[in-house]
Image (cartoon, rainbow, N blue to C red; front, top):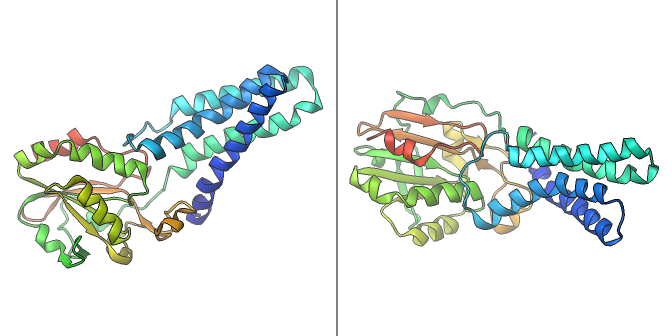
Length: 281
């Protein structure tokens, strides 16, 4: 199923772009304006949303239902359906197929693709002791999770630099770094991505936050948060592996006991930075 989702998120934007092209051609050929408006409404919301988060990487979380995406898409499909039924003209069949495909893709993205339906890791449950595992730092030296014990620590398992919501989440945490330092809270970011990507991210921010690499996803597998085929198809060309990690945030106290665990099933639903700070303050 994860492999199907990986292929879906690769093909979905391409399909939406084809439908968008049909709408533009329809306006150029001065065909039925309602049909063309319907095509645009069913296609543009999700396409623009995906392009926005991918290019700007400023959106760390969304609502579950994405109403600003789903409602216009549904209205666009309804508009084309209305014109098709009213005129009963076979020349509108293609438009019906295109809008139906766009709306179906939007529906699948919101309610199927975004929901990972993951099983929560018992190893990272509240009141559990932080498991012992090995990481690599940006100098490619081994680091034990035992080194994290002794301070209040917030730990992020993120998918990689390719994930726009992960990057937005990291960016908003970085902007609050003075508040975390003020309360003597360590912040740790862990990803299975290539070490060179982790190193570039760490150098970009140049803060006291720690960035580690989970080599070959061993830690994610050990902790039960590995996401098989979690990488969107095509990103392998950028050096990433097909398997990833489920976005996960945990907080530990000075004794290494887990006092907070967010194991979201929906990669678009993530905790607010103020709430994470509030765990310790």
